[in-house]
Each structure stands twice: as structure tokens, then as C-alpha cells.
Length: 347
Image (tube, rainbow, N blue to C red; front, side, top):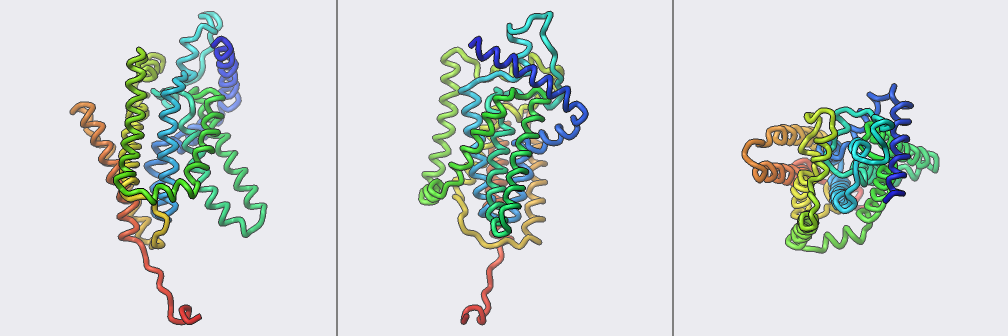
């Protein structure tokens, strides 16, 4: 434990170094950390893929959902501090030599720090997208592939820098997020997994979702029985965040589980989409954009004054409806038949 605290002490100075070197690029780093927020990816970037290809959206959705579940599980099990509160709680520093790291509204996230959700989810999301692009660009030679991989790792580098700059994560939490993200990507993109899920009935897939929820619920209550408050990170964030208004309930682990469960239930009912009609993008893109706007409006009007149960149930239903819509309604209304001419048939 002493050795680990010494490591975190060194990583605090790394954060201070990053904050000093990249201070003039704060707006850019803020844009990066906002753009690759798992919630923003889930509500904007990923749905846009539904307007381009239903099969790609299906692969991306499965990968991101399972990765976020894994991230939630790992955070609860590892239960690591975030830099902005560890620095104030640790005995590695005294009141005389305790440094102060810069924080703003992007810093104060009320969840455990390891692994980084930004890095883990973004690694998976980019891995899926770049794998598709790499397959397409392979026919143009090696140079585009090399440039694509440079872009991939450069993006992960800047996400890591942004998370350290705002005091959200230690360096090792960023690295661990990337490693787990790559691992989850390869598992989720394996044809065996997809074929296995396709073979299961809708009831079995829903049962699998219920099993995941029961595992996380069990982990929640095991912590309580051990005398550990599962919401300890929320309390630490409130204690050491400079402005409590920076904190958002949508960044807690419990809310994340609710959001993921609503989406995964929709995916379980529809099932992985391996083959789908090509989309008429003149219809699919406007349709997806409209659905995204309605989803944002629905989430912004989540009832907050009728108790926790209503709050969570509403969020679950909204995420279920719109995920189902992207998977089922968009291809049903904007899918176009491939017409084969008589001439091509005879050939």
C-alpha cells in the first residue's frame, strides 16, 4: 500500500507537469474531453452511425455497451481514488508541502477513477470505427493504414492528456483504460461472440441482460455488507470539488448502469444485425438527427422531483425506446431494396 501511495505521489507531479506544459491549450483539451465523454458518444456520435449503416451501428453498440458495463464493474471492484480528492486525503503530503492541482467543472466526476471511462469507451469506439476504415483502405496500400493507426493512437494520447490535465485521472488509470478497451474491442468484434448471440432467442438475450444487472446489484450489496459505501466516490467528490454545482448525477455509476441497461435491453430484443438493407441516407440521416434531438429533449426533461425510482425508470425507458428505434425503425423506414437489372441477372 505504501508503495502504491508513493506511485500516486509521483503521478501527482506528472499531473502538475501536464497542467503546466499544456496550460495554453486548455480550450482544446476541454473540447477533447467533452467530445469523448461516454455519454456524449452514446447520445450523439454513435447514433449518427445508425444513419449510415445498421450493421455497423449494431457492432458499435454491442462493443460500447459491454465495454461500459465492464468499466463500471472494474471501477467498483478496484475502487481507486481520483487525483483531485486523493491529493487532499493522503498522508503522503503535509499541510506544508501539499501541492494544489487545477480543477474546473470537468474535474468533478463522482465515480471511482480506475479505469478511465473516457479512455476505455473511446478506445473501443475508435477501434471498431478504425477497423472498418482500415479494411476499406487496405486496397490503397500500406501508407493509409499507417496514417490511420497514427491517428488512432494520437487521439488516445490527447484524451489521456486531457484527463490528466483536469485532474480526473492518474496516468496508470488512463493506461489501464486503454488496455482494457482494446481487450474488450477484440472480444466484442469476434465473430464467435456475435454468432453466439445471434443463435440465442430473445428471451435468453434478455436473461443475459438481467444476469449482468444481478451481478452488478450483487456487487453493490456485497460492498454494503462489508461496510463499504458503494457511493463513497460521490461523497468524496462533493467533499473536495471546489463547486458542488459542477457535479452531475448522470456521471454516477448507478445512473450509468440504468442508461446501459435500457439500451442493452433494446439490443437484446432486436438482436445483433448482421445483414441489413442499405440505407437511403436522404431519409436515414434526417430521421436519425430528429430522433437524437427528441432523445436529448426527453432526457433534459427527466422528472427530478418524484423520487429516485421514477427518475431512474424514466431514464431506462427513454434509452430503451430510442436505441430500439435506431436498430429497428430506421432500417424499416429508410432501408432501400437492392434492385438487380435483368441484364445483370443474365450475366
